[in-house]
Image 1 (cartoon, rainbow, N blue to C red):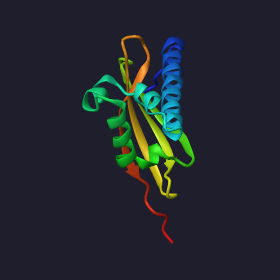
Image 2 (cartoon, rainbow, N blue to C red):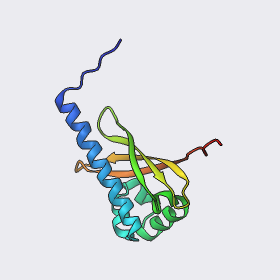
Image 3 (cartoon, rainbow, N blue to C red):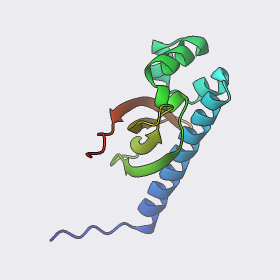
Length: 132
C-alpha cells in the first residue's frame, strides 16, 4: 500500500488552485449569462485568444459549439486535478444544458506568469440518458 502525505504547503497550493479555478469558471459562465463578451473573453488563455483573436469570434464560437456552457441551467463542480508542477489543472463541471440535457465539462486551465489561471479548453461529454 502506498501512502501519500501532502505537506501543508502542497495542500494549500492545491486548495488555492482549486479556488482560483472555480472562480475563473464561475466568472466566465456569469459573463456568458450576462452576454458580456469582453469579460468572458478575458478568462481565455493566450492560446485560445490566438485561435479567436477578438471577443466576438470567441463569443460566437462558444454560443454555437458550447451551448451548455453558454446558457447553463444548474451547474456544480466535480473532481479537480492539479498537474504535478502546478502549471495547469483540470476541473470537472457538471452542467444541466439549456434543454435539460446533462453534461460534464472538463475545463483545462493553465497558470499564467502572474500566477492566475486562464481557461485553455473545455471538453464536453454528454451524459447518458437514464435507462427506463
